[in-house]
Structures are given as C-alpha cells and as structure tokens.
Image 1 (cartoon, rainbow, N blue to C red):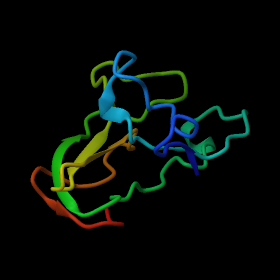
Image 2 (cartoon, rainbow, N blue to C red):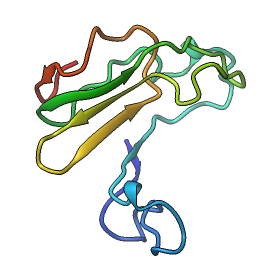
Image 3 (cartoon, one colour):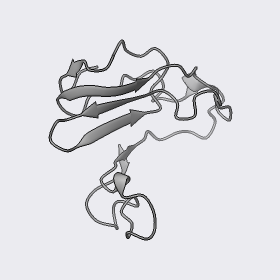
Length: 118
C-alpha cells in the first residue's frame, strides 16, 4: 500500500518548501503493510522477505548490501543507510529502494535492470 506520495502536499509529506528540507525526496513514495502491533521479530512482519522489484528500466547506479537484518529496535551502525539499491532510469530520474533485506539480489554497478524484476 502507498502510505505517502503523490504530487500534492495533501498526499505527500515529502513535498516541502525550499527552506524546509531536502528537495531530492519531493516525489518519493512510501510503501507499507499494516502491522498488528504484536511484532517481536522480523518474520512477524508481513512485508519481511518480500522481494523488492524495480519500478522501471534502468542501470544499477549503487548497491549497499553489507548490513545484516536487524531485529525490531536494533540497528546495524556499521552501515548507516542499510541495504539499498539505486537505479538510474536514464531520464533524469533515479529510484532508491531502501530497507532491502540482506543478500536479496546479486546486483552490481552498472548492471542493466528491467521494470518489475530484481
């Protein structure tokens, strides 16, 4: 489910005026699944283990895949951003898929990627 995103401030809290934050996220979308509130481990979350797919064709620009999967409330301080993939869509747009689980894919820069794959 898209919980945040779009082209208006009413649907996307990433849209901010120039003096109130980074402009590199103004078209960001946040996806989530409802939780029960009783999650104690990663496997309790319905979204855990679901593969992330590419939102469009492009070239892998950067991969971070050195962070271990942390239990709720913990963090891997050795890799501040967590596991992530950045795709250059070659049209002036980039997509960042973050909070990717460890060892999800075997990507490298500059692999080509097609929409709806990973």
